[in-house]
Image (cartoon, rainbow, N blue to C red):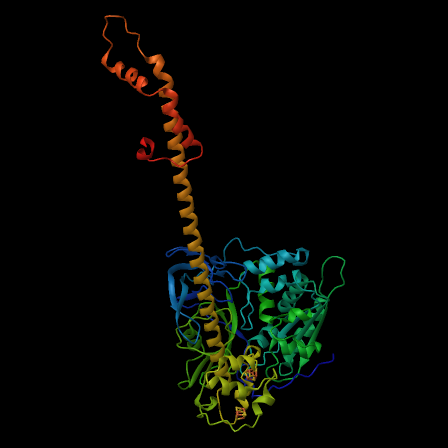
Length: 556
Ligand code: SF4
Ligand code: SF4
């Protein structure tokens, strides 16, 4: 199959040999799991269990909220011992909403876990719904809810599903091992996703440094046959493609360009080209969810680096503290210079080994002093190596100069938002300028400004809404008061009319020489002083059109 060249990129030492031949091991359950409620892009899941509750493996712990979100499930059976906050799997180490679970050691699945005999008989919407319920997110690190991507056929003309199995980050071998050991399950998940997307072509891109995985996936793909599509449509073809080993081949947009020759528009999606990209671990999770009804509760991770005693690939229950992985791998050989979650190019430093593993954790690296670049940054010598290395065609040296001067708008105008944070520029910089870190900081600042702006707009909107509400209340009160006055005036007029009408009839006939009763004498006298008709006229008029008059005005 013809491949297309992409610009830039680098060839770092892949260091994959440390763990590439280590078969996947199951990490024993820790005494306590800390399961964050946000392990995905989008809204935080809402707890559906309480402290003290007993749960089965796979049981829902927190449900998704809104269109972009994902539920969270129990990684094992046990007792909920806390619904609160715990340090996040993030460089900041800030506390986030977390459910703590004490395993009971039985690892008992919930009884209502039910798979589907023929997932290809389900509608695409039903496949996406089951994927959503299983809490599956992009497991290459992006953690975007997978069901949202599977529903893209409703908005885009799709033709291809690309499986991003490049795994171009040095050290990481978890996808490689998963494909070697579970190729049939991965291919099954891929075919199910192709069915949901309704595409006619599946391209599985694997870097050439994983020959065993390429062979396993080719064998599984050929024995599975073409993937079925909607009834009446041609089955989708499957190609397992050997990719050149070059970082960042695993960048979604660059992988699509390598395979199809088409460039994703700036700020656009690969779906704009008719292509959806998923990860092999995501495909495996889809297989588990559709075939067995199992939600995403564990994942394969690589533990590597020269500071680790025994590098390994581990199947880890989500929520396991990083320290448990390190202990299982024999601890540290030497104090690590850096502890990174993910790969060395795009991963993020971990604040402590207490933090839990999450759906997007593909690796834990304990790097020794010799593996890390601790050289002091020097002034830029304008060698342009960073420009040559940038796969996005940006000018990292200019961007960094603007960022250092605090000119964020300038950095944005130079394409900051198109930077994928791959770190290729920093990798080649002879002056050791941490370019990628500078750009990540600038992006963070821009995001913070955006949030502040949004907050300001929201505050303004709420204030305007409040003013409108207060005005409406005042108006309603005024109307109510006017209505009451009108009703009171009408009642007064009606009473007066009634009284006037009743006066002649009530006048007692006084027989000559007989004294009238005292209480009946007054109306007779009044009627003589003020004729009934004249007495009610002003009141009738008030009730109909005029505002109620004051007693003084009536007298005048
Ligand atoms: S690679 Fe480093 S030294 Fe060379 S131009 Fe870029 S920022 Fe400057
Ligand atoms: S980090 Fe950004 S600027 Fe640097 S090479 Fe990658 S895409 Fe280009």
